[in-house]
Image (cartoon, rainbow, N blue to C red):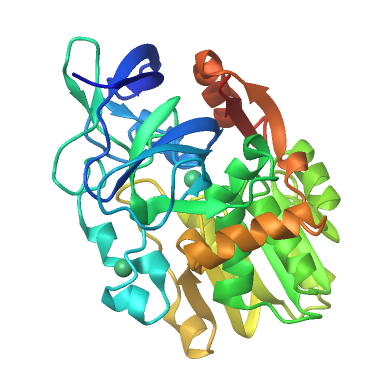
Length: 369
Ligand SMILES: [Zn+2]
Ligand SMILES: [Zn+2]
């Protein structure tokens, strides 16, 4: 019999509301960790599964921006202990594969394993009728309790508020890491950021941290452009009324930008990024485009040494970068509270997705009592 129970939001069908249900959580197996979640951010990647833009086996407990406390560990767990405060890493890192060995643990080989089940190919989540429910990225933080791989659990300092730093488990690291780890933005440079939500705002604050001279924020919503200014953007471009390429050209005296970042998941915007750069400039895709998307680019732009690349979980070394960002926040160098537009309970999760879909929030955080 299952030892633990919890409440979770379950997605049964694409485009259907999530249902909040009592669940049973089976005890952690070898190398697994049971976490009592305290809070979870609500991210666009979760929404992509609900809308069907990202395919996933159903039913599933979504959520991948979690923070909580370890309440049980399975045999052989060495990376954390009962009572540890932890963030989740939706990309696990094993520490021994090719990618982990060369210092790129965000590309870890564990990503090639099915992500909707534990490594033994089974789920730890049960409905009251005993049927199994899929995990999401082995995190499933839209639940008061879950079992994770120890490779996806990152212990952090205990004095940091879990209902704020949960955002470091995805959006904050995705945005900041793209700037600091992938692009390695240089002081004085010009940075363009497309999309000023829960990821783009972190591109902006990391660009400021890196000493960028000009930070040009592009969005269609005045509310988001206001937030962008608060986070350090020096210029705001409303793409619903202005042409971003022309405005970037004007702002840079016809030269173009050094770096561009796309935090939306829109193929057209990825194409636009390259037009904003000067020769040798670098563009990074962070947003997840709908399944099956394609882009069209003029190869001559690449021959002029413009770079088009991407960033996965901010190119982070999860066990180093997540605690570091928490330290930056606790030291007053990074804004996280300002990212939290709404605090809601698990029962309000469908409302949280409505707000996200309408672009009315930077981030909503679900807080579990
Ligand atoms: Zn996310
Ligand atoms: Zn690995």
